[in-house]
Amino acid sequence: MENIRVGIIGVGNIGYAHLSCIAKGGIRGMTLGALCDIAPAKRERLASEFPGIRIFEDGDELISSGLVDAVIVATPHYFHPHFVKYALERGVHVLSEKPAGVSVSEVIKANGAAAESKALYGIMFNQRTDPLFRKAKEIIDGGGIGEPKRLVWIVTNWYRTQSYYDSGSWRATWNGEGGGVLINQAPHNIDIWQWLFGMPAKVTAFCHEGLYHDIGVEDDATIYAEYENGASAVFITTTGEAPGTNRLEISGDKGKLVLEKNELRYTKLGIPEREFCFTEKTSSGIPPTEEFVCKFDQTRDGHELILENFASAVLENASMIAPGTDGINELSITNAAFLSSWTGKTVELPLSAEDIAGFDRLLEEKRTEEKARGPENRKGGKATGKSEYIKRWSVKW
Ligand SMILES: NC(=O)c1ccc[n+]([C@@H]2O[C@H](COP(=O)([O-])OP(=O)(O)OC[C@H]3O[C@@H](n4cnc5c(N)ncnc54)[C@H](O)[C@@H]3O)[C@@H](O)[C@H]2O)c1
Image 1 (cartoon, rainbow, N blue to C red):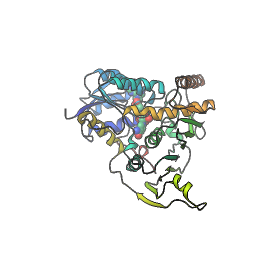
Image 2 (cartoon, protein in one colour):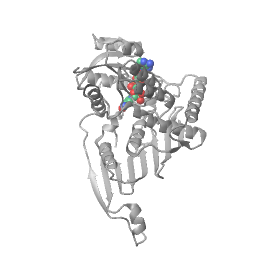
Image 3 (cartoon, protein in one colour):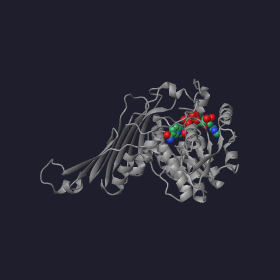
Image 4 (cartoon, helix red, strand yellow):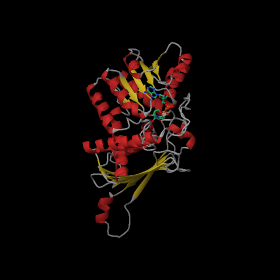
């Protein structure tokens, strides 16, 4: 097989960007097989724009059609685990948009299907292709910071206007999206956090709903997390602050990384801090340091790189940059953060069966309350689908 035939389920903003890139031959190893969207107007438009390509109303039918070897799932988040599981159970490779789902309970089922299937499961964590994050990972995995001590990420440059939230009736609702900034924008960063620094053991969080926008879900969140080895992490994000900051600091006993303004600054300690602390005779000196600065220009869009890597994984057995089963990690942090904020308690990871059920129950309560309040006062359905990947979806420094 030279190319895999790809079906796209959900052809909105990002689905259309993937479509446009694949249709013009921009992804090595992929051709367009079929399309699916539940919106009739979208199907009509796609049918006239892509004659010869079969357009489905139902994603399950597309998966079972025999017209595709793989599907990209680009629907709103709640549908991701269903289509992932359905595809994997039928031996169809699947690349899901982030997040892996809304609730860990659903994603456990999708990951179970992945374990049983010969088909591959990838996830669109396009920020994993960013050269600065890749360099940071290389340094950390190579022992360059030593024993991890602290991660602090202030990522408040996910700014969104009310008009963004009004652009789709599913957006920023408990029923349509299952949350706000933590479930839509921050999954990229929370994935990078756990990819670089590992999974925490405990999460305490404070989420503020509708703090800056006319929405019922959180648009501002602070997560404090603790690790088995005593390390800690603080993660601050919002869509309501301008100008925002994107600054990631990671320190360990042998060095420190600071990523900001498209630059990685690595400070290497000549003597590990733990050793220095107990051998140094002065009272406030610091270990000798050496500093390295890295800057890179990412020449290709990260989404394209993930698509191409996914095709290579299917066709040539390449290792995946973002295996789909990794998606449960960032979602576990997010589910734990919501649960902590809703209950005022610290939540342990991995999530216990009781906490998973507790999260689902409280989310369901929020969905019921939202329904009782009546339809959101949103215009809805304005998303037209862009022809190219837009800057909003790349790392912003
Ligand atoms: N990786 C990234 O950089 C990135 C960027 C944008 C969006 N996303 C993710 O992609 C997903 C879609 O976001 P969007 O901004 O494109 O939304 P959107 O509203 O523009 O598009 C969603 C599309 O899915 C269709 N749809 C809804 N339910 C469906 C179903 N059951 N079956 C088939 N089609 C269905 C809708 O009609 C719509 O056309 C979200 O999960 C979002 O988090 C990822």
